[in-house]
Image (cartoon, rainbow, N blue to C red; front, side):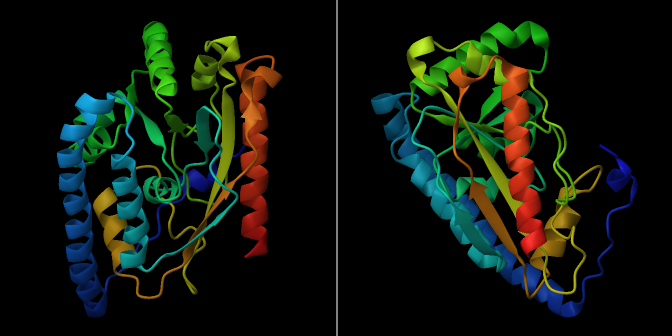
Length: 276
């Protein structure tokens, strides 16, 4: 696949006076929502952890409520097709923006799989740890430990979520899926009936804006991208499509499973963009 899309500089946006007023209002509301939710989650987790251990029967509902209401504050319309599977296993999705975290958390109880460096990031790392993110080291020598970690989380009923592209895009394409993490699901007990559910996340830009308005990629800074979105009065929408789950046992190995998941995600993404 051509990388020409990644060779173009991100679109520059100038923020008018009215945009800064929107930033102030939405920023205050978002801060109250996110940090208020975080405090409530941490307090409830003090009771939840000793009673249930890895299992989290209460706190994920706080995460969902925060993410749904974040879209309301931003003015971004939100829609879903299908639903999160009931099977044990993982969800895989295309990755276009930091907004994916809100979009995917808003619709179901999932736990992200992220690179270990994220745990050390200010603010984002704190939020990730609080919401039960699984941190992994990309060192192949850690593969056995990571498989054991996945097994423990799956046994606790957690649905893991990862982005097989390995990076975010401008929202207009789906990159080839990396297959490494798929291998961990073939190491699970044969009677576990593990499934992988492909999910397509599609962003529809505000009227009059470039079609890659919500995309966040390359060396784009988080703060400028956040400000651009908060300053936009009439927003676009995000669409999350849950495709039928794939039984891991039906595939010969990680490459076949990853290829099928990629095909499903890409087809759903393309169809939704063409239909807008």
